[in-house]
Amino acid sequence: MPSKVVIFGIALVLLLAIFISTIEMFIPISVKNDFNSLCRKSLLKMEIEGGMTTIARDELISDLYRKGFESVVVQGTENTKYGQEITLWVEADYVYSRLRSILARENITQKMVYNKTAIARKVVN
Image (cartoon, rainbow, N blue to C red; front, side, top):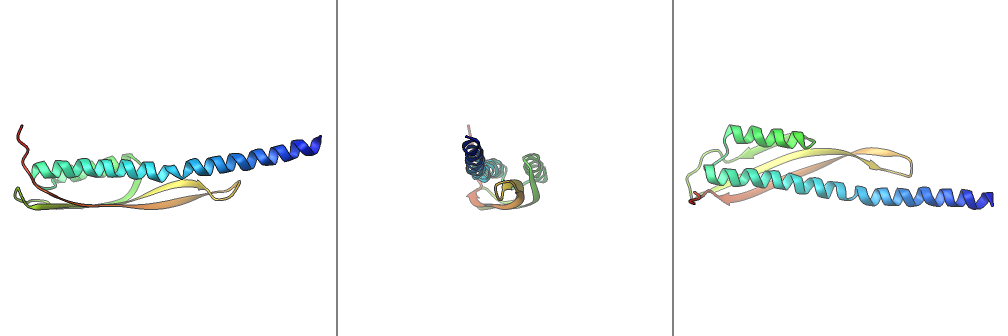
């Protein structure tokens, strides 16, 4: 009877570790989705304004830092005429803790890059 309790305990720990590692696989996917959403919002703003202003750049950087990103680098076309191409390139690091083995965790740095080109356009309602 005591051996069944020990085996049940070990099986429970292993099952819990597998469950946690499976859930942790979705963390970078969710964070990348948030990253792309913030960058896309900034690119749409750039399309309307004809380029990236320093206010828009600072707003994007502060939004990314607020979401937990580090080492944020933003490069975007600053001034352009309507109808020309604008480019937004953003690179940031995201650090999160991940289960390395059954009872050990390690910090992982995930580098994320957003690089898109669009056409500057004036939106008329």
